[in-house]
Structures are given as structure tokens and as C-alpha cells.
Amino acid sequence: MRGVDPGSISDCAVCAKHIRFSAKLRPRQVIANVYEDGKWQRVEYFHEECYQIANAPYGNTQS
Ligand SMILES: [Zn+2]
Image (tube, rainbow, N blue to C red; front, side, top):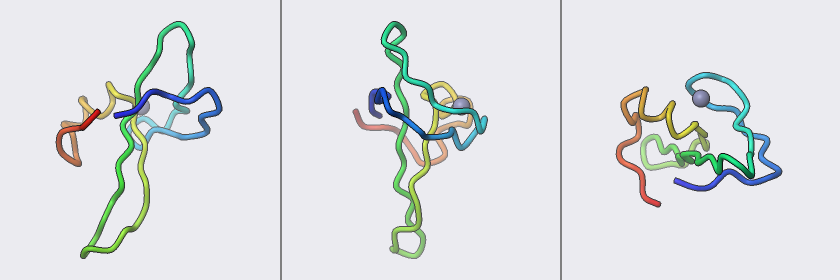
């Protein structure tokens, strides 16, 4: 779990919408490093709320 950076160019893996920085709302995003067979494959990004809606597909988050 991370704060969204001002220069964020990530799209959410659930809703496919841009994860937008907002100084006012201070949104948070979930960043997941995805491993398959012990090998790193990719990074996926989620809106905090989308990750919850998707039932935390990669488990609980750490801040
Ligand atoms: Zn989303």
C-alpha cells in the first residue's frame, strides 16, 4: 500500500482506469509484485478500493 505519486502513470488492474494523484484526496494505491513459479513476472497496480472490491487477490496489504 502506497500513496499515489504526483507523476503516476499507472492503470488499475481491476477497473483499467488511470490511478490519479490528488493532493486533496490523498488517494492510496496497492502495488503488487506478481511472482509465478518463484519468478518475478510483473507489477500490477490497483486503486485501494478496487483491490478491496476484488477481494484482495494478492492477499492483505502492508503499508
Ligand atoms: Zn480501479
